[in-house]
Image 1 (cartoon, one colour):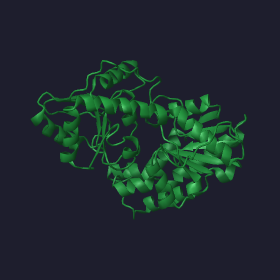
Image 2 (image 1 turned 90 degrees about the vertical axis):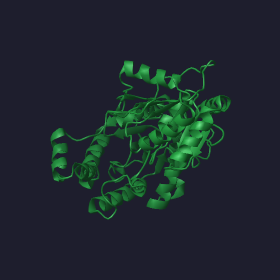
Image 3 (image 1 turned 135 degrees about the vertical axis):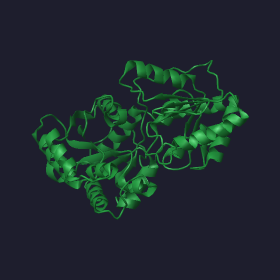
Image 4 (image 1 turned 90 degrees about the horizontal axis):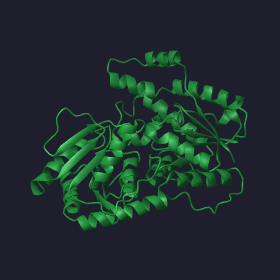
Length: 386
């Protein structure tokens, strides 16, 4: 069964969908599943018209109304259906990223989607400017519900997200499949047998507030009282001032070879990876930490406890608690042998369960089964994330 992929950005561009699209579609290509991948977006003039339709005095409300505008989704869906119906090739089914498109009724072939989040979870976490009662939010929720019910199958990065499609949108459990995700590096970093595990902490994430950055700074201040030589490196945010012991490298683009080298070098030099996000759709940076054999500390909510196995590959802490976070940081900083054991176990967990090729294999099994095509690979229960 061959798929045509659709996204509102260039599918193989290094920065599309926060750098994930290229790895996702490339894995589908290697698996022999992808016929083509289309960048389905509207013209600049049409996009500007939709932006003007949503003008509001508050720029954040303006931005969110634009991103939730169902009229925009309908326009994109029309373009996508025309592109898919006009293309040749051997694509027998559609695989879209997210919920921007609803084309199942117009293309006459099965449609699937892949997600790292949805609007219901964002609302529950309080990471929207508009409230649930806002008409734009209500229309967007209705759009998502209708779109999801038109899918032959929905693929998610986590079991936590899969449960939301079932419980919040009423999608039958048989059509929701947690298939995981992988790391956004071209090659897996080599293990470092002589790696030193000390109080050198790292967090990667541009959205500093949502990633729990202020919380991490407060916890780090507690750590420094007991471990004065502790260090913390932040990649992503642009901070004017930072406390003693903290370095802020700003945003590093994986599309820039120099930035990519610095990013990988910083991972290699770190001793412990920390991600105390207040809301985290998945947490691919945790996988990147595991790839570099780092023990990980993450908040015990969203998808993070699925990725970090507490007491085996790292520690999960009480969400929003600087005391709990600081204690976990101290535990690993003062126990290099434990940190090494967790880091090595994390790398093995990544290799076994979190690669893009593994994701493509699971998707292929579900798509073939849904469309009545025998799969050459022994199928597993893809409704359970590893």
